[in-house]
Length: 290
Image (cartoon, rainbow, N blue to C red; front, top):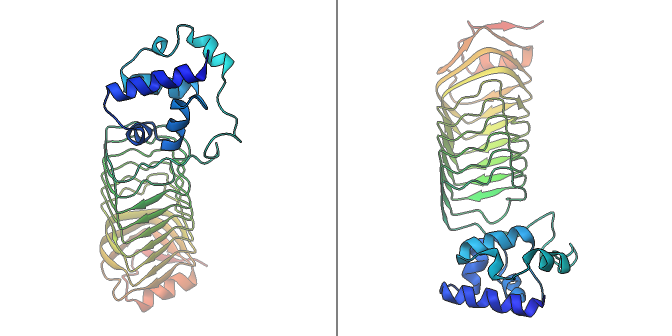
């Protein structure tokens, strides 16, 4: 089956829907150049993209070919060396958009061009989001449970009422962002940096804090438990912060006031104990470790 005929079919259906090549590319999360190649008969979409294309253009798969299955076998998807972007790192531009009730669960490489977007009730469960860049995003009631968000940058964004259970947030960087009402139970914040902005009313049951740094941040209504090791709190403000059944080792506190922190059944090593003592924290709930 000639690719030129398929290209003409795509062109006709696209024009009938009165959408441009660029608009079609945006809906498919691919480059406009790829759509242009299809319509010129220089290449073909893969079978998954054909399915999505048919739905967008409101046509049946048989519209493209009476013998669609043989056409796919004759013209398999482009090899990794032929596609416009590497298979391991798709260049999808999902920025500056309003995403509501979208389900991206289990997908990979959703790590670029996601900024300036409003995302509500979206699902990213068990997704590969390492290196994600979020800038000036509004994220509300989304579910990122079990996803890899390590080495990501969340800048000047608002994250509210969302699930990050069992996520990897290793080496992530939160800058100027406000996080409220989120559930980070079981998440790993090893090496994460939180600079300016704030965290409040978040669930942190069994969360891993190892080498985590809070700087110039507002922390409110959070209960820390488990083990805090090699962490730091510098120039932070606290409101109704509780450390309960927590072991604090080599953790640095340099803040104007630690009086609003409550310690319940906690243990601390000598250096952490002295940091807290110097900040005039209430040490009645802390046992000094030998």
